[in-house]
Image 1 (cartoon, helix red, strand yellow):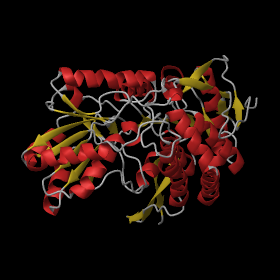
Image 2: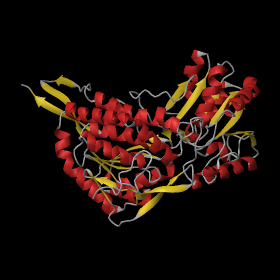
Image 3: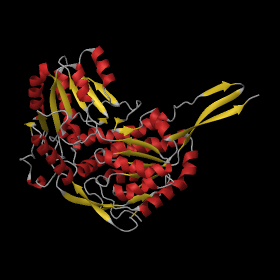
Length: 493
């Protein structure tokens, strides 16, 4: 059954149906969820509320497609991925408008970050598989060599904060190495996944290689994780949901990659170049409404420059324009949902009860146009005066709320950085190279940036320590995760 209404960049489809075996099909029980425009607080389309039967159909399609897709050469699969990348790039504006409307982020940000990164994800892995090498050894007259084979049908669950960016980060390597896919995007941001399905059709991706099942985590997501014929799950999302993924997958001993929450420290030493450290710290705190797992939400500043840094930080953060995501002047859009906005309000209130002082923001914007009065907006917020063991400094807020705390010594800064249950990323600002290496080595985080933030070379491993995740993806690490490596020993005597 075809999509009810094709839609375009200004007119979204009335319903987002599942994409199974190369066609758009309605959910088996005919039930849908409202999908809201965060900037207006009003629904703009409906998303399939898929259940187990829909997941089973998608897995069956992927299983049927696997033998032929996995037997293609790397070059043949690479050509399809390059075509997907080219078509997304050609339709960049349509994708960017859809992402902004679905997620609430500024259209300007979607144009320069989300959609170009999705294009790059496909291009990167299209090229990567053409240059991958395996090893061989000789031992007592026997030739030993390794052979990588795709895992089979893989389950991919992606979040709402960077919808196409992170969905493509999973889909591209998974299909590049010969797997077939059943993916479940967030039910709150499924629009660009639907557009991706249209691109895949036009790119000539064979039916069933990539299937998209829309819906909620406890129903569609859980059914995908529990399915016995899906031996691998890649999940990006919350730590609590990850516990369910681990439990539901355990009976089947599945390969897991879990990229989870973050409460990332941003450490500024007194020799830092403030001309770069301040604006980058503002961006690290509030980019994408603070809804990036890598945001530097815990800022630690050495005491000698603390007052100066706070003053300069607030001056620059006040230049952030909150409002209509389509407005070219807007640099912060709307939060994803009313529930998430309520969560932000809760933590801002909690911070004050814990003794914190609101240094900036701490409220909804008061100057929104009438059309956006019901949107889910919040101002950039900076809170000082909190203990590092306060709930506000310990728990992931995932919004435009940052805390700032002075420190005296290097040892104290490292202790503050490591005092949370998360370990995804960190930033360190110093002109002292020895200290940069020393502190970066001491911080328990999967990625540490020194004198920068959010620079991502896709060849290097990405993942978290502690409760920020399990496993690594990126470059050869993605190739390794999405394949099984076997050893073949051949007697040559």
